Length: 357
Image 1 (tube, one colour):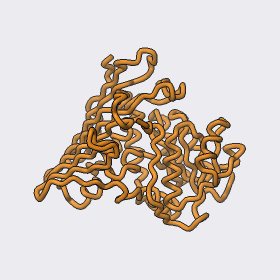
Image 2: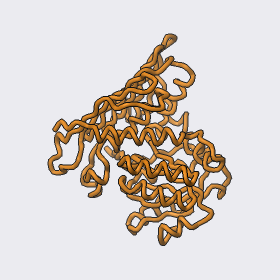
Image 3: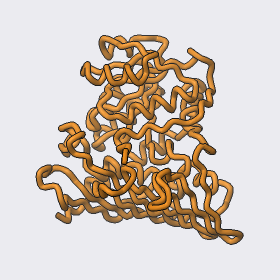
Image 4: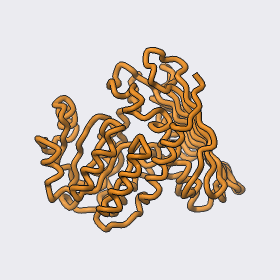
């Protein structure tokens, strides 16, 4: 059975351009994580034009040249940053190097779109905030488990319509398959990847803030462990955390690297959203033993119980909104405050974590 791994997650939706060809030029640099493919795909489907790709590793350049043959191969990062046609630079650098790249991009007068986690320390967060303030540029983040998953988008629409009343709790489960032989060396170094709560935990914290409508939250408790991978002593293979939002909503999430080989996909990602008038369950990537496609949303409220198969029906509006935000200097895709708050909380959850093993 062929399985697409989470690190190569690259959804394809229906093209829905918000600009004319050539009107929004962007580039992709620092191709260390394969999420860059999904980031570029989303922008291209929204009408963006990928003009440049660059990485110092020729192997990575070859791979992404084959995926995006329309893009030119830059000879240096500077060639990209000095191009006045480039409005946004997308990057998926080593996690601890994402902030430094963003500072260079914003200093060059471009907006920045980074893979999650967008940074690994609070010092980096302070630097990013200062550069955004000084330059007026954007530091956008690819929180793909909400932005590039149709049922996660649909859940937000249901909540906005009042389908479950006021959201009072979220529970997130984000298991991933490790696929250790395919991972680069930096993936196993805590200083580089930031820890499991900073890394894949960032998806969960962003969703908690979004679905509850919170502007801030406190990490009540967080835990990490390496239960089963002594050959990688700096790897967290398990983590969980509990949070309380400024509006009183609570959240819990678990992330891990224990997806079993028998599962048909890289992770049985689920989200449970409890409201005062009902609840929603998302089975994002698989409805286990029923189908392998995922994309199922379950709703129960005062009026009905219903299962939605929304594959191919919702699309990925974030990317078009981001392009228009860059052109119009608006904040409809995601506010800068929200992107940075999720980053702050994932770093704090990692810093405060109790080690179980």
